[in-house]
Amino acid sequence: MATVESRSQAARAKLIHPVIDSDGHFTEYLPILREYLVRAGGQDLVREFFESFKETPLSTEWYGLTPAQRRDLWAKRPPFFATPAENTLDLATSFFPRLLYSRLDEIGLDYTVLYPGIGFIAQMFSNDDVRRAGIRALNDYYADAFGEFGDRMTPVAAIPMHTPHEAIEELEYVVRKRGFKVVLFPSYVKRPIPALARKYPEAGRYAYRLDTYGIDSEYDYDPVWAKCLELKVVPTFHGPGEGLVNRNSISNYVYNHIGHFACAGEAVCKSLFLGGVTRRFPRLRFLFLEGGIGWGRTLLADLKSHWDKRNRDAIKKLDPARIDREQFLDLYRRYGGTLYRENVTLKDTAHFVAQRQNPADIDDFAACGIEREEDIRDLFVPNFYFGCEADDPVTSSAFDPKRNPFGVRLNAVFGSDIGHWDVPDMTEVTEEAFEAVERGLITGEDFKDFVFTNPVALWTAVNPDFFKGTRVEGAVAKALSAA
Image (cartoon, rainbow, N blue to C red; front, side, top):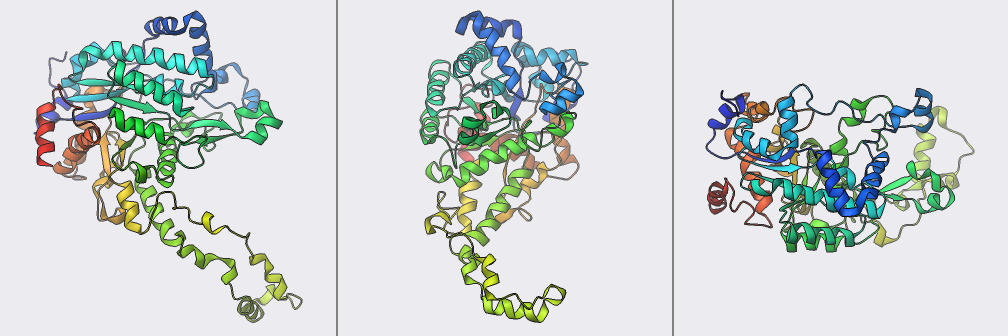
């Protein structure tokens, strides 16, 4: 559409490799989505589907409450002004796939993976029938809207995860019958706390736990991961952390928004790792989107340091039974100063006695089978990928082995985030990412890894034909051959 070369076109022209976007966004056009909802469940589904938003981070309940009521109910401030309203062309581009397709060169993208707007919210609906029928309608909408543009973009199917059964059923449908290549799982499922649910059923709005599919899960989700391998799809996560305990302001959306994707991503990533999922499914790759690389880098460092000090052998050094109470009491007498009392005796050191531990319960790394610290590296680095936006200054740290744990480079992949409010001009996003090279934060080879090599490795890990028939097929084939 552009008659003048955009800044991103100019940046793309400097490259000898494609730019693959692993996290663009589109918006569902509600008049058409309603048609799909009616087809899936009639007018009742339309009504129940939109009523279900009241239990999600997009709830508009806040607007109908007085300030006193918001504080009384602790009603979270919802998102607002979340579309590029002043740039009508970009707004329309997020709605209409044909328009986006016509502008990809102007945006500087050779290929893009596109995530929905409503899909990751519908995954949170608690009503089983509304959630499953609504997601089926959404996925049919996505498949039909993007079907003719597969050479340069692919939509992402939403997969519900309240039970493994419903996840597997929708996976089978979207991959085998609708041809999806990318799937989106919710980062967590809210589960009731049984004792509180029995005694105070109305408190479910506040009293819940997060099921993150690895440790302490309601179900065994291994059949879901096995199905992903069978169907050759990468599990991806893009769930909101807004509304969780420390992102639950009743007055400030920015407070709720900052770090919320990273918060949700860390929860599920940590759970999958400590739950041994990457040990049992070493070929599977997992992608966590829009949270950047900072939390992944910190998590890897924390896992390493915790294992060093709390592995099944090291933790025995912390057993209170090892304390020399006689020595402790002697030191107390000599150095207690104003804290010293004559009547304190050996029996008063009993507060050092901890609860008796079952030896089988003290190894927090048992499920992932860590025998040496390098196992953490080998079960984390190859399996986890992190979506990073163009304007994120922390992204360069992914390519800094001197400062990263184990001296590794982490798998950062470019996520344009087009279609969201934080990209005010789609035509500048690729150029903005390339500024990291121009400013000397990363090298040209680092940038190639960011926008091409890492995405290729991610999407072809379980599906070597992922890019077959696309504009980047030739370049991908050469890269895989060289690798």
